[in-house]
Amino acid sequence: MAKRFLLTNDDGIYARGLSALYQELSRDAECIIVAPEVEQSAVGHAITISRPLMVRKARKNGSILGYAVLGTPADCVKIGLDELAGGPVDLVVSGINRGANVGINVLYSGTVSAATEAAILGVPSLAVSLDTHEEADYSAAARFARKMAAFILGNPLSNIALNVNVPAIPEGEIRGVVVARQGRARLMESFDKRTDPRDNIYYWLAGETQLPEQEQDDTDASALKRGMITVTPIHFDLTRHDLLDGLQHLVSKEF
Image (cartoon, rainbow, N blue to C red; front, top):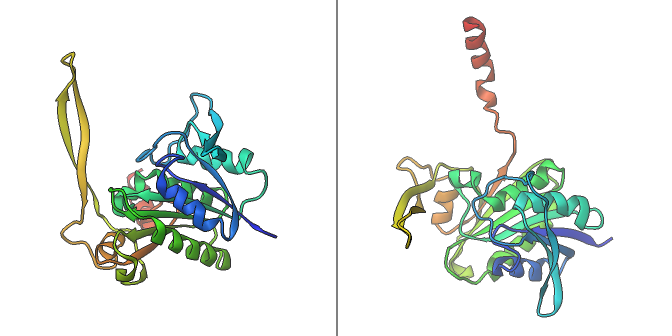
């Protein structure tokens, strides 16, 4: 039986990264696109509960492209798997995001949250990002996503999403693939203060992702900076299991 993939992103249904992903993965599976109507970068794992989810069939060059959802990436996965896919889905792939999703920034990422939502719902998933915010060639990242899709289907990982980051360098210069842990790199914020024509003050969030001084070589951001593709298994359980017993002892003494 032919495989069926659900594709989504946070850059919007017309993003070039999603198009490249569709073109490559369609070689191996029936691909259904369910993606945000407009860009939803950095919305994290938000879902829509205070208004209806508007869904329309999006077209490109006269042909049906997929379903555009006026909602978040997590919304797209939820409604895609439950209502729009028209049957079981073997894999959810989110991306290809413009910009890396590494370190602390993973918590803000709509791209990664879409993959995490699929894992919550029991469907294998993959998030793919390209380490550039410029317009770029997504073809190498798409080809690697195809390899990873085959890998995941051949090696099922229960309730785990894989977060993949690809360096934006010529394919022949990529130094390999490494399984890396999530590091502590994060966006070092700055706020650009401006005034509109009516003298109202507003701010644009700016900044760039930086490695902390003590970042280890085995982290996602560090390996990506060295020109390697990084693969990080992520889980939706945020519990610090190593602290449970000690904290229970302290709480018992205090209360």
